[in-house]
Image (cartoon, rainbow, N blue to C red; front, side, top):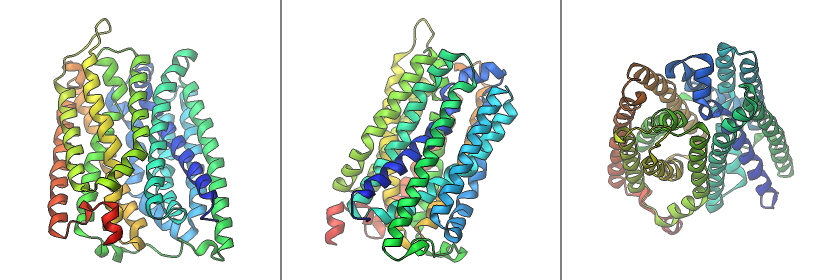
Length: 428
């Protein structure tokens, strides 16, 4: 069954879940100026909607991995998917009641399921796809993530403008989350049926227990990768979470046009995903590519900082240049990172490794938005508060750049495994 066309249905279900998760999780940033104006709040308080999502995920992915091992991958997917639907329901109801604190609490519940759901999917995809197909499956799944963000950036501000009520766009997110819950049930049913055909049942992929002893089995490069991803993914989200607001308040675009620009950025990244995965397998040299992509992100943030402000009468279209930089980084870096992580990690502990990485990245994602929000609110009179925030992001990306160079040096010292192309690895 796993070698039939059913595996493509599995990929479609997993991609739909990723689409829905990222559509709903990014609802706030798509109409940030409207939310801030409606509740009369600044960036620091608004970013609570992202920090409370990330805070539980500092630890939860490891707990989620443990629950997945104890209770089964399929059971965990259904539990975490339910938490997403409950959280989005509370978030939407909070907007309906015009209660910002309830919205924050809904985001917290949403966060209890979000990252753990992503971690739980990976073992199932690895069961259904092997070799080159697995890389394509991951690339396709990541494209669904960006498509979800793109659709959110396009539709959420427009729905708010059309309806004039805060809860309407969130209601759409709730409907999409409900559809993903159905997909999760289908996903798990097909996997259970495949296990039964193989006479393996729940034992497949669920037997191994998480152990602290696993920590000594990870390579030094793995820990360098973990640090790089935590800083760079945190910085990248620091850019993308406030991108609509930056385009509106600093560079002079109206909310609708800003949403279109952000949608185009996500859409182009999504289209590039599978192509990038194929290119990486052909080209190899992953550590060099990571250095190039991180350098692009550094200069992108620097350019955001030094560009002239725009006005509603004269928007600064030069901002499209750093937007292209973000597109290039987001298209390459995540796929490069997970390809490297898979190569330097023993397959028996890859689930634990994924949980550790998710925990660390959520630690930085819970801290960085709050720090950026405080910097913004204290410097709001200077370039709309988005000069020193970008300089702070340059510092964070600079740390990631140092770690990426260290990864490159360490890989060269230990044989250059990450520099090999897919073809060379097959003949090694």
